[in-house]
Length: 233
Image 1: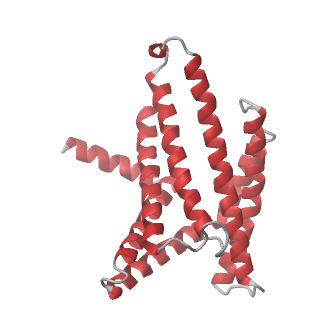
Image 2 (image 1 turned 180 degrees about the horizontal axis):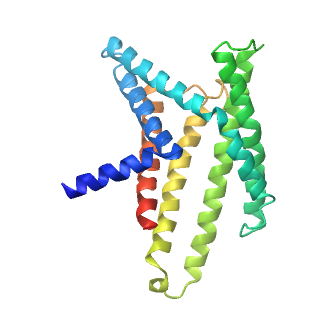
């Protein structure tokens, strides 16, 4: 009973934050898409219901992202030219990622306004394609930064003569970064699938496959939140 109460309290704390709530919403969105894809031919009516649920949750997440550019601008200003990064490669990747994200959010806003017919946007499909391209670039750069940071930390571990001298928290954080690489790689596969047909594997993933990838990514993200909270205690 005590462990159940502890888990519920932790879960409530997580969904009380924007990042935690978005991860849970993402899990619900893609698990519904997964079910819709699975039942597409077995039970079309049930598949349609779950597809509708997935679409509505996805729309809610997109609406909540409308003000994400404000904290993004603050972060980019604080980050500057990456003076605090461990090497020049990390700094270049960081600055480039910030520029891409600062351009990505306004583009996503235009797509949102066009989708809900709030403003008339010419060539709305072209805006959607540009939005997908910037999403791919954003995820790719994030993946490169995470892999580079993991590699630098691994080099430090390899140079350490006695691994037992390292704190357990340091090793745990390093392992969690490997989970981040897997999670962001899944996000990259998903992002590329939204590109127009003819570009890599754009448009080639089925609803079931997208649902599976998104659900796994969200599950890893939620796991990381729990793991980081316990590490920081």
